[in-house]
Amino acid sequence: MGLFSRFKKNHVSGSAGPAFDARCRDATRAHMAKFASNRRGVEAYFEPGTSREQPALLLVARDGEWTRRRVPGLKEAADLSQSIGLPFYEVVKTGYPDAMRKWNERQRDTFHQRG
Image (cartoon, rainbow, N blue to C red):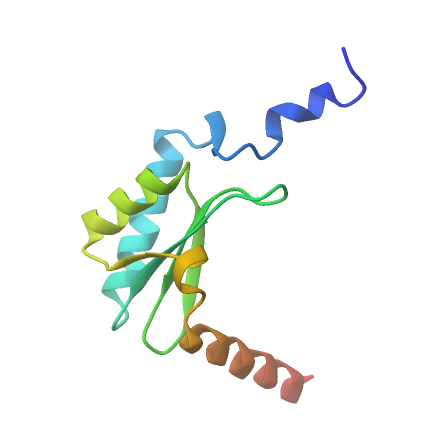
């Protein structure tokens, strides 16, 4: 057994692996559907996996509020978005929406004003 081989099970390899089971899938779908139903103008963005992060589906509302959940891959993200009835984009092709950046700035400013 190699020095780091025990860590490879959890290493990001482009899929969410066995940890993304039916329970996780159902919880992710429920969370995303609730987010989309309680906000206006929600769009879905797929974030591909990196060496540090697993692939994720990002939902962004018109006002910039967002939520993110990991997904096994692009196909699953597209299927989930379609099942909820959301427009689907890939971050590597479109970039992040400006509304999200502005929302993050407002949240940061609010936090610093309180502190």
